[in-house]
Length: 389
Ligand SMILES: Cc1cc2nc3c(=O)[nH]c(=O)nc-3n(C[C@H](O)[C@H](O)[C@H](O)COP(=O)(O)OP(=O)(O)OC[C@H]3O[C@@H](n4cnc5c(N)ncnc54)[C@H](O)[C@@H]3O)c2cc1C
Image (cartoon, rainbow, N blue to C red; front, top):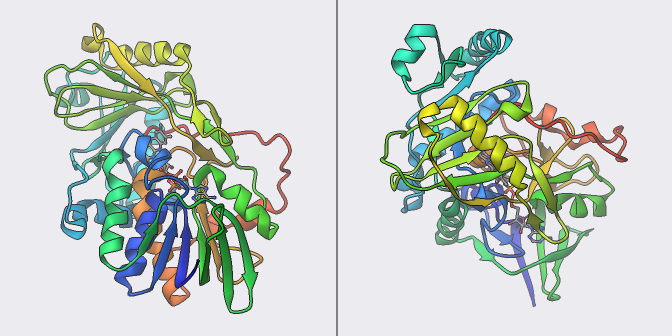
């Protein structure tokens, strides 16, 4: 079997499905090839944090774009992905972190992100449930959370309604440049051709970029998640601890049924080959201790389930987004290092624009794959994000 389109997207996570959606809106023909089911990997099992604050300033233009999509998701997709713009708050325990909140808020304003920083009595009036160790809170009123289980499949279905071909259970094993474009082959021997290819294959992207002589020091890790028994619904927003001490980090949100979903702390092991990520019990114990420190009234809560997912990390914690440095028509987007869910639709929209028109007003220079050409690929040290989803 052989099929042709303008663009082949490899990977059906939040980045691939949103790129297919925005390309289809631009009337470009798209084939999206997904090894399993859309949203089956990191995009479908994450915390669901729709958080702009704490990102590198260079990410904010795409992150703001993404927020517009989250806000319009129900209207544009014709289905609800449970985006709740209930606000996202970061709190901290250390004076230098409180000072950083003020600095970041001042810097982020120039990039279109407005934050309110509260301290002391004003903060406790606003959030009376916070532990008395908390020094300051940075509030992003327009952010919130969404349901990761629903999002990528919904973007995939919306893209399909606009004409994209979404092919699940299609494991891409080979991508080659040929006259007039690319030849992409699946494990089943099906062949697809297009003028442009986007590789957004999460923790597996390196296997494909290496086929074009662009290996990157991509590492798989598993952010640690837990969910508690249900209690009365009192926390519509999403909240987390910002700290330079990774062990102190924890973040949470509550779903209307009452369960509290938690994450934070150091990620656990993940294996890209087996596609499994584990939760280490000691991480869950530490996470709950930090949760009780942040919200002492939650002390009696029991954890009823834990999980993780295979996420791709890069040494500088920033993603690769943009054109290949070696092959015309080839593009990449991967390595979101624990925070690709919120920004995913902004990346998808930006890539669709770039593939369709050849340019985008968003500056992608700091996300170029070129930055790894000089980097050693042996024993890369992972710098995990200090921020919370
Ligand atoms: C537990 C957890 C919690 C997180 N919490 C948050 C959060 O609250 N907020 C936030 O912003 N981010 C969060 N993240 C990060 C976020 O989920 C990811 O950064 C984001 O989903 C990455 O999307 P993606 O499309 O790049 O990758 P993925 O979702 O991994 O999608 C890549 C897809 O490519 C497919 N694929 C791979 N190789 C091939 C191939 N050869 N052929 C065909 N298909 C292939 C895979 O099957 C997969 O479906 C979290 C991640 C995890 C794991």
